Length: 78
Image (cartoon, rainbow, N blue to C red; front, side):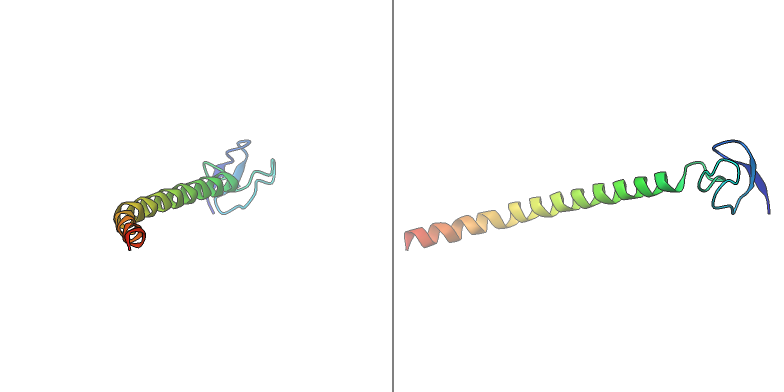
């Protein structure tokens, strides 16, 4: 049971405390609160998802569009 100052008010709290008994800050022993960590995590997941979606879209466009153009051209000719 080690005590550290709360990041919100400086009150000495246990490192395993979920909230500061004085000011109510969540995860008072951590440098940033749980909500900010979750927001950062969600932002990173969304960014990675968008990048993957764009990469897959570009791959499909580059690999399959020439094939689709030739198929459409053959249908119009014949």
